[in-house]
Image (cartoon, rainbow, N blue to C red; front, side, top):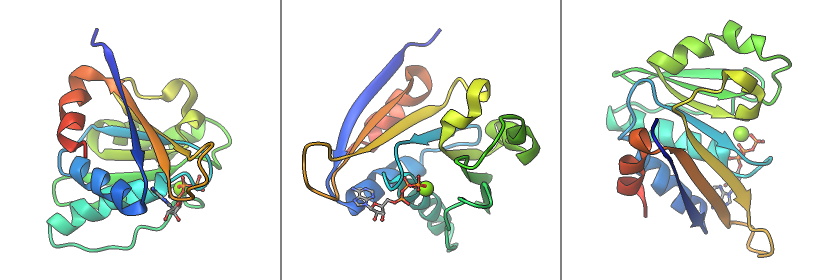
Length: 164
Ligand SMILES: Nc1ncnc2c1ncn2[C@@H]1O[C@H](COP(=O)(O)OP(=O)(O)OP(=O)(O)O)[C@@H](O)[C@H]1O
Ligand SMILES: [Mg+2]
């Protein structure tokens, strides 16, 4: 079994978070799942939007990336594969995950999942996890701490490359 790794990062502006998301975006391949956790307004959608728009832009495409708060899932067609952006906050039962088609998408698409705790036992094993938190004791409203963790074999080298 592969060992786990983690990195603790701090981003002091939305643009710094965007830059990291963009650096990671172009290294993603189908079957990659990124779990985005943290409180309301922590920056999960901001990060996902930057990943999606950066991949689309690399292929000359541009699309709005609304929060999937009410739709639960939004999909995008990157010419290489689908990107699934989901927000499971409003999920009432893990069974709904199957109905959404998310389990299959974990294998075939690039998936960005907000509120992944809702997945329960369906949480994919090889996912990268990003846990966002706001400044804590600091009163800087734009400061975000991000703990990155996941299986090293699949993710560590790519994270090293994307680090600021
Ligand atoms: N360093 C930063 N990184 C990311 N976002 C930041 C940062 N500083 C400020 N922000 C702002 O914080 C807000 C984050 O909102 P976002 O919708 O991404 O939150 P969320 O975690 O998806 O919340 P929800 O649980 O409601 O979906 C945005 O308005 C963004 O501009
Ligand atoms: Mg969100």
